[in-house]
Length: 175
Image 1 (spheres, rainbow, N blue to C red):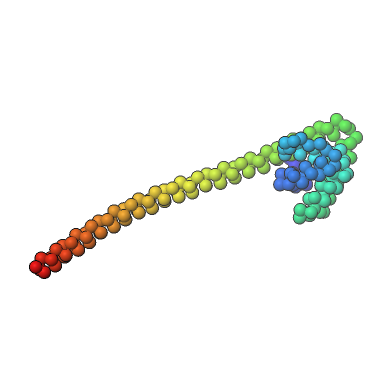
Image 2: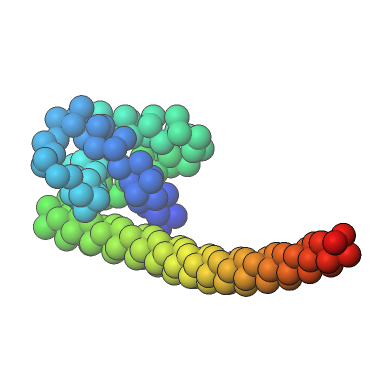
């Protein structure tokens, strides 16, 4: 599982991938033409585990400028640096830990994307229900309008017959 700092970092990557991509590119990391969250996550963790101070400082500043608590972000940087230095003694162990962190981060991305997909599907279903309700309301309104039109024609016909009858009576008594 990701610890608290890593979750915050992953949420920042998920919500601001364009910022992290920009920092990676400024720090000298090459990005593909069609960048994905997984690519950004992998390169971010590689930069952190390789103890790239320029990247870590830029990332900390970006997160702090977006309203995050700079103390927490400093703790993330310190935590990652400590983890990097502890794991630095054995290169293979460091690579396994990197892969574990990247995999966990990718799983977190997948979870966030799935949650977003569920939310969008819920909104789609809601919109479909509202559209069906609107169509049903429109059909009922149109039916009612047609019924009113028929009633108006009947009333007009009755009024016409009454007026013609009265006019006929007037003409009959007039002669």
